Length: 383
Image 1: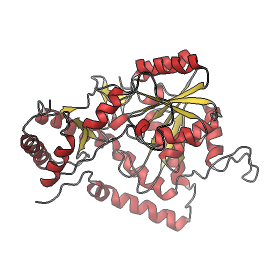
Image 2: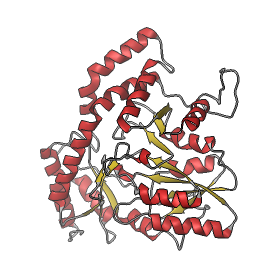
Image 3: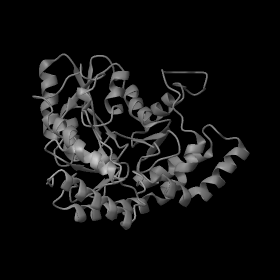
Image 4: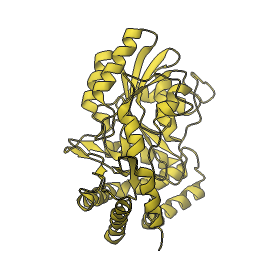
């Protein structure tokens, strides 16, 4: 029995290949490998897609998260509030600038930052007085936009900057609005497996703040000023390669169609798996980009379930088996409230099934049949 791909990048590649090859050929002919015209074209297109006034591409999603912190001068003695149920980069960038990540719990249904726990955690830090609260990084986990209206309210109450980590959820909307309607900066990753990904590393930041955008553009190229040999601040080498911009221009053109396809596939998963597993809750006014289709297998059966699925030729991935506050590099940093019980429960239960815009019904049926058989082999259905 053939193994099903977890993400099918090959079918998408074949769809866009002719247009991308033509662009790459032009770049090679022109020799415009660094900050070529395709980079500017992409930034304009991303701005049109999201409605953001300023778009600054960069070398990775991690660049996109760390550069705003650098621009705001966040560092030693400052606190940045982040969820623990996320990929390491969300907190990593805080440590890299010398600041302190403070871990916040998430909601059990949506898996996104819990605004109520966030407020309590900020209040705790203010009360203790050993750190200065400066910013919040909220994550659009598995493709679903966070509850930015409530998170923005906390940010405004305490005078904090707000970054949207949209690496998994760029393009997700709530009431038709993307994260940029609430966040000071939207940071995204174009890693190949993302819903909007290139063929290497890449990232972008979007903001309506022109002054901030100018600083980010400076940081992107070694902190340069009006002349590239007049460096006015510390910066990075964080440019997006022209080749990757060319790939993204063509992928962005089909991105809305792919979001619709992912939504249709997720809806079918919901229907076919109803009563068998508990999926991530998507709120009624939200359009997710479905970076992952993640379900919960409670009762300590998750790991046996993944083995049973693999035996049936269906790959699964666990995002995430440990919260950041439980990982070696991060466990010395503070945790809000009385711990993070939701994060720790999710880390025991969650597993992601194959999801991409080109998942056909026959293959999806095979995945669902494997879920039923795997659960049956464990002698239970996880509801």
